[in-house]
Image (cartoon, rainbow, N blue to C red; front, side, top):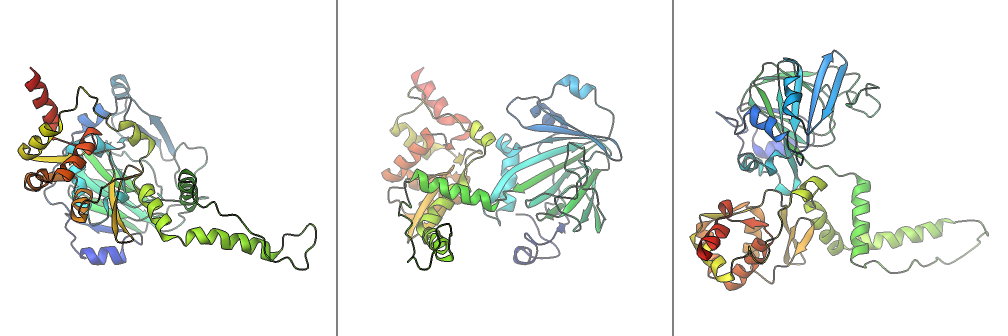
Length: 400
């Protein structure tokens, strides 16, 4: 867990989260980056990894390049004033994924991904604001951040630039971050970070944001998929109407009809559980393939592996969450409600809360056949996995 300094966790959640920035000095003391700049550059060479570069040629002249890149692209770069950004590194590097544990005071289903940037001296992506919450962890080197709360509006952009850069950016606060420091920024808060050396790496823990229209459209899709809300609109009592008039009673009747489904708490909860855990397209493309028949160990082999392994862990792409609906715990995985077959609430909650389940817990679960069968189904889908495909390796060795 990150170490809050000037405020405690409760104060942060009450007074800062989605309200105002907070600099947390040495939030992760003695932090050492688990990823070198060369390794980050290596990821940017891969087709399935989302990456981009930003080069600043002069004060207001920025160039955006989209990956994947090649070694020749790097050889042609200038000595300074450029930045490499790679999205979704938490889905690719286990050590980066484990850093999410430090931020579990915010529900895990709220996280979007971890983006990592590397910048040479002077490298930056320009003054801008985002529509989401972010924790900016300085992983190596130094970066100067400049902040503003002013002019964070859609009309304050420099025209003719590939990036959405703020035209007016009056600096209100300025900080220099060193390794282990964390800067929290709420949505719509202008920021501009400039690398002060050639070692500058910043990890951005970004959280999802939802537009009202996105929520509305998704709920409509949910109702359609479940063949729900098929009751018919009914006319009001017609009084003193004209042939071409839509009177107040008519649209109020439609409003009342729509409000009836919005007042259905069970429908809204079920929809939101699916919505909150759905994957974006990039993550969906990275989902592991379910095991085929040749790759699937028997149930008895699986149970023995549960007893023998040090742990099982969630695939880093997968999103798990639970909620209580009408005194029943429901589990959601990757945008779908997952059957729990009347398992004990504590088991469902523990699996949703923890990306890794240790051997002591697995020893107990392996003795409960319904629990083991449930885990077996999740493993077959590869939503949960053994360390380094341990079970598959053992199975193949047995066949040999």
